[in-house]
Length: 389
Ligand SMILES: [Zn+2]
Image 1 (cartoon, rainbow, N blue to C red):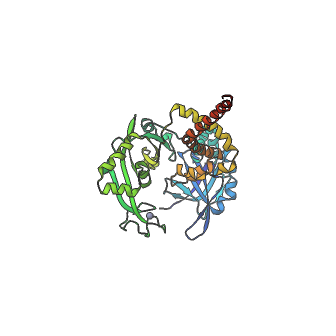
Image 2 (cartoon, protein in one colour; image 1 turned 90 degrees about the vertical axis):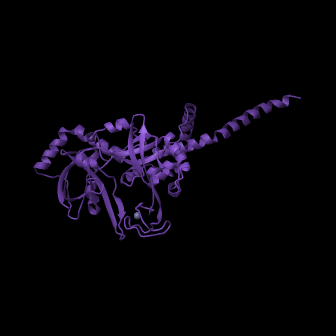
Image 3 (tube, rainbow, N blue to C red; image 1 turned 120 degrees about the vertical axis):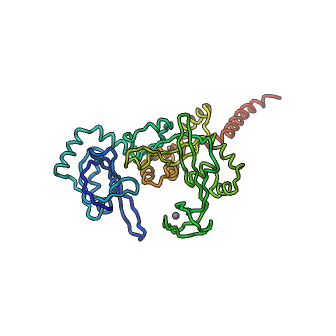
């Protein structure tokens, strides 16, 4: 059912630039997102504004950070693919200074609820421009979060282990290399996938894994899809399929041991059911395998190297900007969020990530460094040798 809606709302955020999207027929489209809110719901709503509207009309809202503006939109369509959102349509107009009762009430409301609006705006900005710092919670704290405290797009991290990983909970099957949809086409064969409709789909080994995660405070159930299962097991999908299909419990024993002992960072977000009935459920959004934590001494020396390298790297613009793709991995969700994350992270943030890599290399190289020191001291003591007969 596709209704058209006229909406009057307060603008919380406007994307800086429009995004170019090329359609399957090669047509260029431009879209820009505006986040709006009103008194009726705590969840801000995103309006995708297309083509002509994404230019001057959006530019006129550029002072969104300085002033809460009341704006009208005519004939918006609803989009439910990613939770509730609105999109402009051919007949949509943006009304910059709407008049009428509803607009007047809203204008009054913005004056009396400034702190609420600022709070909502801050949350939107936090999601649009995330810092590299993960918000780490325990399972218990996560489960205490109330629906009202959250926005659909918020993400948290929990550090978990999987005490009882079972081979029985691994699902190995043949599916599309791009969207993982099940297929009967033999592995390795290119085929037309009628789900993702991409031209370069190949039938491939795919795996999912269902597990109970735990930290000191509680347990949660999750299912990982293909790529995250590979990350979790440290094995490729075809290796995992082979273990599963041959019921190689011995090989799985090692994976099970890793899952039990090596903490994993899991990214979770509320499911979309939140917006329908306000029951809060958590959904798996991605994971990261933690690197072994360096001990305190190592940390101290890493800090020193960090400082030294910081100066060194700061001088080199080239290095600063050569690191764009790392963040894409970090925020690898197929949501527009990754886009925002990419834009939002300043070169300095990227630099820090680079730094960590260099630091790791530096730790590996430490023996060489101390070797060099020894050489120097040897050099100075050999300078004393000529005095001897
Ligand atoms: Zn597919």
